[in-house]
Structures are given as structure tokens and as C-alpha cells.
Length: 390
Image (cartoon, rainbow, N blue to C red; front, side):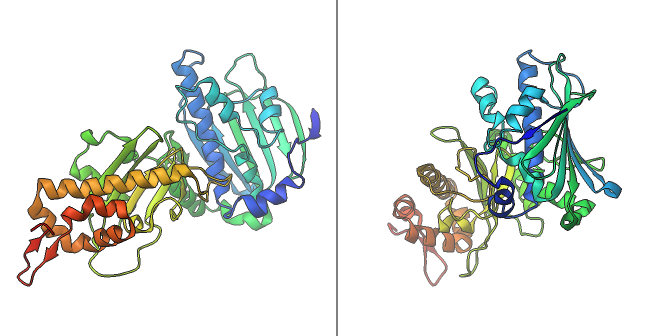
């Protein structure tokens, strides 16, 4: 058995994690599942390159063992050797995902991890964490690693039969809520329901609905968009229309933004646009990403190029974000122009429902105004509609 001290880049790293890096304790499960998905995606990449065997179902499982107060996150992915545990677990803040992406850059676009501290979010809720892992390389022995929430650890060889990793959390007394099935299910549905690897909890797959924004718009029909909207907002009226976002240069961004019906002057509904990073839910507060006038819309945006802090819960000011804002704003105005040109009568029928949004956006953004000034409608007392040129 090996005993040692974790190599960290700041004193008292665990209090920092608990008090400053994560605003909400439930994100520990998002981070651990994201790590498990990363490990699975890495293995898929190696299988596709002929460097690993394709045996067994590639999935992630979450288990609760209530009598022992244990929560487990299990994957059958790439696993780790003793040297890799030493490097990626014992040396905090060094992300294996970054190294892997550099090595397999063209094939590894789906890797989620960026920050190297996600594993240690387990100590937000656990007094002890035990990790069992075995590398996909057949000549590597399994490893057992244990830490009690301080900078010391124990690591020893372990006879693990299956490739992959088990993260075992011994929950602290103040984390009993995470032993409840309904709580865990709600967290998984919130953060993980669009992940690209099957996620199972209590025998049921959590993420059985594919993310519509990842599909080719030419393959989708009106019903597909409306059904997806109903999945996101089950109690809302159907959307008026939508914009499908898809760009991979100079930044990567996908998404679908929906136009809800706006019939009176009200404050914009908050938390109706969901931000994902590689299909992992991050936040529903996008004030730092989208202009205020676009926040009247509903829907999803997904971009790995939006800068995040280590908690993935806050957006930082960045020139890339301003480019993303400009792209989305242009796509929205282009969609409005398309509606006007293709079916003016339909556009006029929708006008009273979208006028608040269009006028507000035109007042807030000069570029948006320039792109839409010729499709702003004016209504006379006989309910006839005119553009300014008319």
C-alpha cells in the first residue's frame, strides 16, 4: 500500500472547493457523471482507432447503498493505471482530458472535462471517497485509492475484473438528501438527460431523449421541433416559430431558440434558455451570454467555446461571447426576414404576438434595427399592416 500527500497548488484546497468553487452542492453529481462520460467517450475514440477492444455495454450507472450511506458512480470506460491515478488524481488541477484532446484532437471533440477539479467536488457531500479503477490496457493492474477529505491518501493494487472506474462516496451526515432516489433522479434529469452515453439509475435510463439541436435541421420536421419544445416546457403553449443554430467557425455553437407568444408588456421571463456545454447542462442564467432582448426567447444553446470558471456555473466576460451574441442576434433577425419574405400574410398574423420582441430588440441593438427596419409593421385602425416603405 502506498500512502502520500496530494500535490496541490494552493493551501486548504478542500475548504476552497466547498466554499468558493461550487455554489450548489448538487453539482458534484454532474461533475462525476461528466467524468464518467468522458472516460467512456475516450474509450470509444480508441475503439474507433483500433487501439482498444469493443466489449461490454458502454454506459454509466449510479447506485445508492443506503445502509452504508454510499453513493456510487460507475463507468466502463478507459479506466486508469496506477501511474495515471498518481498523475490525474493525486496531482490536483491537472486535467487528463486536456492531454487526451491534444493526443487525439481530431477525434475527441466530445470530451467534456476542462478543469481537473471535478473529481474533488465529491467532497462537497462525502467524508470519504474510494476509487476503484482498471485501465483498458490488459497488462495494467487495478487500483484502489482512498481519501478522507484532507490532503493525505492511500493507494494500493486492487483485483478489479472489469475495465473502468467506480467512484464510491461515503456521504457525510449533512448530505443525507443525496441518499433519496427522487433527489438523485431530479439532479440527473436536470444535468444529464442529453448526454451522449446511456445513464442508468435504479435500472432506468435517464437520457433516453436525443438532443434535437445536434441533428441536421434538414432532417427535422415541424412536429420534431414542437415535440422537443414540449419536452423542455411541458406546461407552455406551443411556440410560434424557431431558429436552429449551427456554426463551427470561428466558434462552435449549436442550439434551438423558440419564439413564445408575447401579448403584453411584461418583464422578460428568466431562466427559459438553457446553456449546455457538450450536452452537459450548465445554467439557465444566460445574462452574460445573450443580450437582454434575446432573453425573451426560450430554448437551448450548446457551445464548448463559451469560457467557464471551474464550477461551470458562471460565464466570464470574453470577446468570444460577444461574437456569439452577434451570431445569434443575426440568425434571429434573418429568421424574421425569412418569414416576412416567404409569407407576409402569416408574418402579419404573427405580428401582434412578436411585436414586443422585435421593437424592443430594434431599440436595444442598432445592428438588429438595421437588419429589421424594413419588416417592422405599423397597423391602422382597420387592422391593416404596413411597413415603413408602404
